[in-house]
Structures are given as structure tokens and as C-alpha cells.
Length: 367
Image 1 (cartoon, one colour):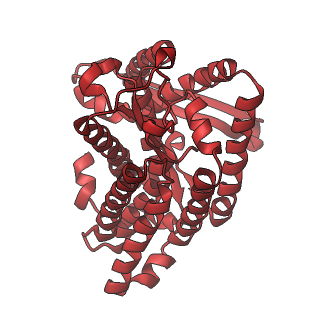
Image 2: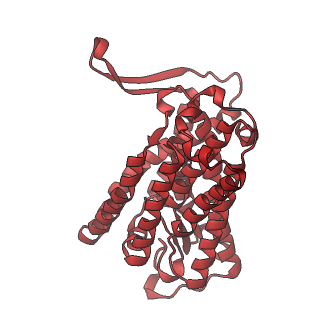
Image 3: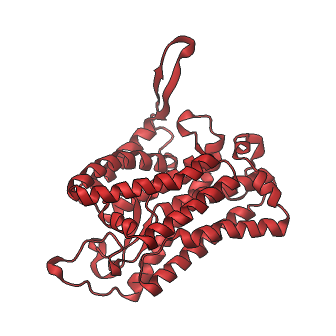
């Protein structure tokens, strides 16, 4: 997953080059502030709401909404797998035609984006349907074998409202496929991020530290040590990043001078922040200290990334600043409260017990 915050002024963003070899006019301070502020806000939304939804996801009984648990072994291997994937994409773009590769990737992310966006908006859209709406239940069941050896491969339950959401998401998908517009890109990017935070669960804090530590090294190496990540980010036409134009005030919705934030900089810290929310709930103290602390730490870390990038005019590995902040601040709070042992002994499987959760705190905001 691409993970870097980039400034288009030195070719780090996925913006198109101006025609006839002309030079882009410099962005105004207002445009820069609007772009970076918008990226920060867009990063916070999927983390906050994804964390809230991860609590109910952990308690859920629907097989289609069960989270994917990341173990310490998975966390240790993830940076290696991510590095191989990133290098493979880099070589593909160097060897094969960029146009055909992006066409295949566009079709792939077209399907994934529709499903992710539909899953994201479904809880919100349900509130807008009238009580008289004819809502029928459906189940997509695919099994293997027979009798006692029968095994479920797919067991997905949905209703008519979900089909309406799927139709709306398909409209966005067609818009993205035909125009590659930055708003459609961001809708898919936000959906991917929220689904990632909601459905990817770390099993404990130690696993989170292993994952964030490994990706800290991964991010720094591929951004500062090589041009691989920046090259892939520029070549990869898929909603794996959030973008916002710095020339929006001058060109409106047709603006094309983008600042960029990789989804990895949202999902990776986000799943750790979501874990801390579930840890807060397991303490049964009706407080969410660690969640709010890590959320504030994320704001600080991403703000620092933007500041450093703006000063040095170079793409920054955002995890270089986000990982120490999101891990360090909660650990310091745990040290101050004498709860370090409880934090590192917490297992996420406890959150699947409904009795271990309360209806207080930030969870109420998403009901």
C-alpha cells in the first residue's frame, strides 16, 4: 500500500504535466493551506468513523462483516510483502506500457471501489429510507462439499437498501472510470480507508508495534533511499491515494495541481487507533483516553509531516512522523496512569464479548 505525503511542486504528486512543456504557476498560500487542510480532514474522517465501526464489527455475528485479524507473524511479514509488491509495480511500469497496466488496474479498482463504497454508505443511507420502503432480505451462500463436510466459502447477507447503495456506488465507479476525476478518486479512497480501519484488526498492542515499526522502516527506505515509491505514485492511476488540488481556487473542479496522501498513511495508524478504542472499552471506565490521545497524536504527526514537506519541498514518508506519535503518546499516557501491563496484555478477542463493551463515549456518535 502506497504510503507517502507528496508535494506536486517537485514532481512528487500524481498531477498531470502541463501542456507544451510550460511551467506550472506557483500555487497561492491560500490554495496550499486549503489543500493540506483538506487532506488532513479527509484522513481523520475514516480513522474516526472506522474505529467506531470496528467496535461493532468485532461484536458482529454476520460472517460477511467479520474482521480480518492481523497476528504478530502477519505484522512481521507485511513490510516484506509490501516491499516486493511495490518493487514489482515499479518494474512493471518500467518494462510494460503504462497505459495498459493502468487500464487493468482501473477495472480491478472499479469493482473493489464499488463494493467498498457501498459497504461504507449503507449504514448512513439506511436512515434516509422511509419506513414504508419495501426492504427484502437476501443471502448469497456458496458452499463446498456436502453433508457434515460442507464448508461455507461465501455467506453474505444483504437487503434491498444495500442494492440501492450498490447502484449509487456504481454511478460513482463509472464516473471514476470515464473521467478519473479527483473527487471520484477521493470517494473511493475514503471508502477503502474506512473499510480498512473497520475490518482489519490487530490482535494486541505488541502486534501493532511490530507492524508500525516495520512499516516505519519500509516507508523511510522507499521514500528517502530510492525513487521507487514516488515513481509508482506518479504512474499508478488508481484510488490508492487521496488528492486535493492546490489550484482549486483558480481553476475550480477542473484543477490539476495535486497534493497527495497515500492510503497507507491513514489505514496503518488507523487500525492501531481503532485497537486502542477497543482497549478503552475493555477497561469499562467509561473513558476513552487512549483513543483520544492517539487520535490527537495522529493529527500532530500528520501536521508535522505537512510542515516538514512544505519547508524542504520534498516528498515525506509520513509514517516517519506518525508512528512515533501514535505509539509514543499512548504509551506515555499508560506509563502515567500505571496501565502499561494492561495495555500490552490486552487481547482483541475480548472485544467480541458484548458484555465487555459499553454504550458510552464516542460510540454513541455513530448510532
